Length: 172
Image (cartoon, rainbow, N blue to C red; front, side, top):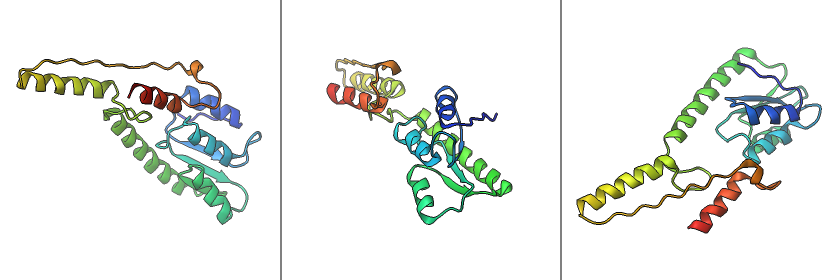
């Protein structure tokens, strides 16, 4: 499915409510520069680095604008007119790479933002600890904490990742 947004604000609302596989942003949105929006999406982790963002521009691109686009987190930077066959091939490759990264993350034992065990990792570690205790005929104790952070609890400008790392450091 394709979801259209005509302003940067609409893009932000859409990515917060919809799981996107790929974004195509123009550098000339009515309310914000597309490169700045791309940087914001990446810096505030609104969109993970595994989600491809393609920036397009209708003006002649320069080396500096290309560097700025890639530095902001874009996977590609295209000028109009866009070769549709080439763009579709790139999009197919990018989405396959994103989905493979998503599968790997789902199978991971660690939380990406904190470096601590996620639920899957805690369950596996508990099984390993239990098996070791059984082998050596020892006692076993396991305490698992899983802080739940409400989006409303995060202050402006502070990402969930920053808050989660602080919790992790406090518990460590």
